Length: 171
Image 1 (cartoon, rainbow, N blue to C red):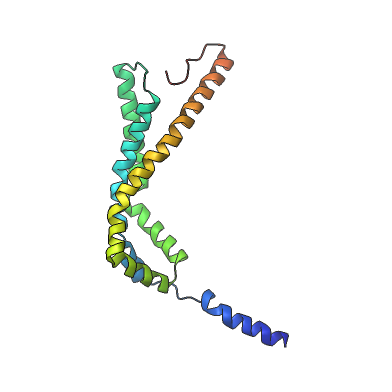
Image 2: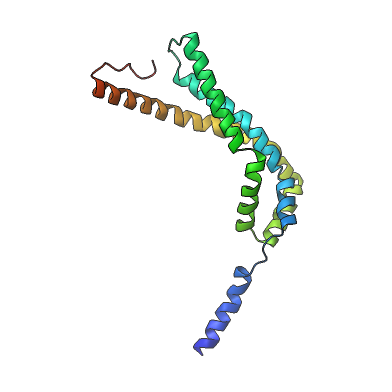
């Protein structure tokens, strides 16, 4: 009797466990209809703008020399080049493919493809850049004070270590 119950439980659970893996074609089609590559490409300029805005907020009120400003600009350019390389579609596509393959079944893929092909799915995709921009702006509001606190903490630690007076935060 126990063996019969175990078989019954296994047969009920089997469809969930044995759900068909999505095919490469399904994953590719989903990434295509989701405009994944275009989304990634559109994200990089937003990251750059957000990074520049954060640095501008962190240095607001500071008198930077032209040399300091040039160094800061070069640092930002170098940072964005690194981010651009790390977030290129060539690097991200295999990651996306693996994530979607591990997360969704073939049936899930078909449903997602149908949704993203629909007018509602396309409208969602049209709004993704604005959604990301609004999200980054809100995240920046949260992160700038934390970065300023970190900057103050570092200045205090350096002051304690060297005995020198640290500049007030934000100056």
